[in-house]
Image (cartoon, rainbow, N blue to C red; front, side, top):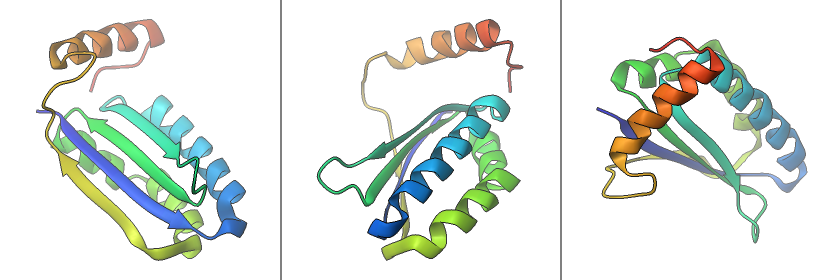
Amino acid sequence: MHIYQTGGYRVKPSAINKVKQAIKDFVDYVRTNEPGTLMYLAWQEKNDPTHFLHLFIFADEVAQARHGESEAVKRFESIYSPELVGGEVVFTDFELVSGKPAPEQWAQWQTVFESSAGVPKS
């Protein structure tokens, strides 16, 4: 069963570029090494560039745990954590009600993506 989650936080204005680079490096790692992380998006709020929101879809609890326990997460946390303002990262779990693509299409998309990218299935 897929896991849908967000993680939101704010950083010091002086740390915006540092955190953005860390996000890019981290998402590159996720893209290459975590086939069970079906989607990972990192957004920056236009009207408040200190605010970041990450959106995740994990294939299952095993993929979520693998992601959370990775050295890449620890490295990413070591960069953004000292720069946080207004509290820690707030993680929120969601249930998919509906969307585009439809839930059935996510599975098809994942299969196509993995075969075209040569990524082993989780």
